Structure formats: structure tokens, C-alpha cells
Image 1: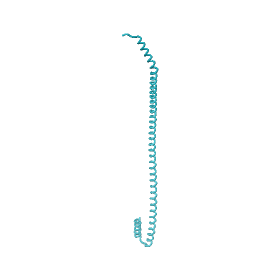
Image 2: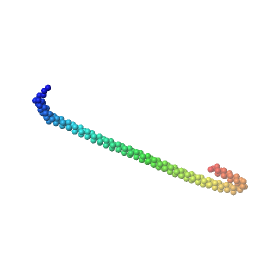
Image 3: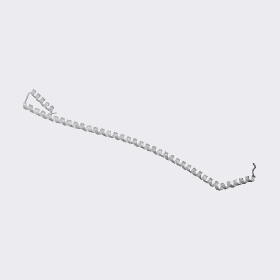
Image 4: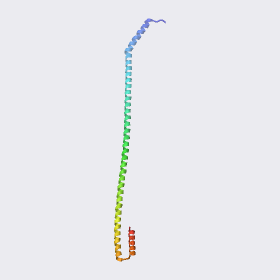
Length: 161
């Protein structure tokens, strides 16, 4: 195998000329497109990273908002419980006060009716006493008859009550 030096140099010269032409007209635009593609991918990765950070931030904000809403709901429930307990206590207190008032009125009514009954009884006893006295005077009876007459009228008075 012998090397033909003239062909060898022509091939190297052709290769160098081809390489220069390719680098000027083919590799430049190709590498430019590849650089644009690389930059576009880099931008998309950056955009995706920014979107991920924003979504994480929004998620955290939503978690905080949810936590705040739960706290507010718990506070509202606690306040409602306290209000209902307070209202129940007030209703019970008012009912007891009304019961005591009605009881006092009933006792006053009973006392009043009792006093009226005692006054009426005294009036009847007075009338009976006057009647007995007038009968005694009219009859002029002895002591035994007088006792019988008093007992008889007292039994009448006792029966009327």
C-alpha cells in the first residue's frame, strides 16, 4: 500500500474547503437553531419553575386561609354556645322569678281569702251570739237549757262552715 501524496493533499484540501463551507453555511445556522432551541428550553424550564413556585405560594396561602376559616368557624361556634348558655340561664332565671311572683300572689290571695273567711265567720258568730243572747233573754231559761242552746247554735255554725 502506497500513499499517493498528491491525492492525499487534494483530499485534505477538499475536506478543509468542505468544512469551511459547511461551517459558514450549514453549521452556523444549525448551531444557531440549536442555541435558540436550548434557550427556548431554558426559558420553558424557568417558566415552569416560576409557575411551580407560584402554585406552592398559592397553595400555602390557601392552607392559611383554610386554617383561618376553621379558626373563625370554631370561634363562631364557641360564641354561639356561650350565647345559648347565657340565654338559657336568663330564661331559667326569668321562669324562676315568674314562679316566685305567682307563688307570692297565690299566697297573698290565699291569705286574703282566709282573712275574708275569718271575718265572715266572725260576723256570723257575732250574729249568732246576738241571736242566742236574744233567745236567752226571751226564754229566761235555766243554765242547763242555756248550755244546750249554745251547743245547738255552735253545731249549726260549725255545719255552715
